[in-house]
Image 1 (spheres, one colour):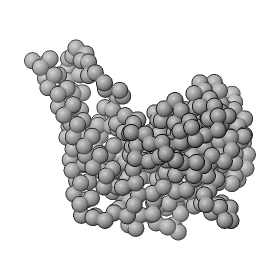
Image 2: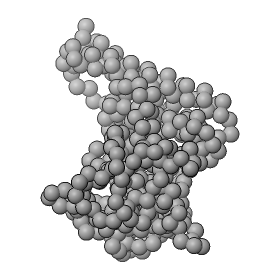
Image 3: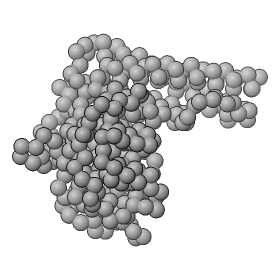
Image 4: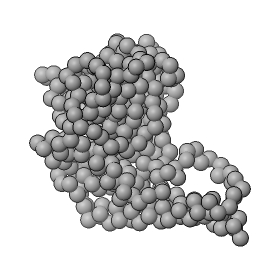
Length: 343
């Protein structure tokens, strides 16, 4: 159950080692650290183009299976919420364990290869009874599990000729973990949707969003200049100290182009019953919330985890502005160094 441990990088609560039974914790940690030869393998996180067709109700027979494109809110999420047992305080959700490096933000997709029996059972249960929804249980350290998890649904799958199935997951939202229900045969938790609070000052959010777009545009321009310098001359490598991940791919195209791709992914396989995602009252606020995620998506896993954990669109947008301003300064320094090397 959620309780008193708080990670300094997060605003939300975590499950800590002291709050989980030793047997459950050991099994969860083992599942999160197994190499690709033990159950499932992950591939890069990307925005994806989707096909047509429908997932079957049961089994995982041959051929590519995709889900039909209809509107805006994932039908899978609606089906998962409708599966709540009478009188229950949370929905049952099967989960895969992931390190912070594999966090899925809304609109991102990830390819998995499932081949161990328990993960195939999780896949079949999700497709058959939970609207194809799967949780991404996030390990924030060697013994801590974030109480906020990613909510994904299966948008495409195919039986493999070697073993198991290839599955494509789409990030559609977030959930708050209410408690671990079971581990056998796979991880099941009680979970509820975790959405942002209503925006109180839309005008201020719009202004902040404009600043995020402008800063990201500056970063794209500087990255383009750096790329041109690399093409023109072989610059000597420069040690940037604690830069932990390569974020340059996020700054090689305009933010709005990235938003269009994310939107295309999210709009695929949707219900017309509710036109807006994440409880937003309008398409504009939905787009602004998506922008707050996209603006921060190119940074390191701890920053992405904080974005997932935040429940205030304004705070997340402000974090995106702060990180983008820092990134602009870093890229400006790099561009200056490349300019010196060329002269």
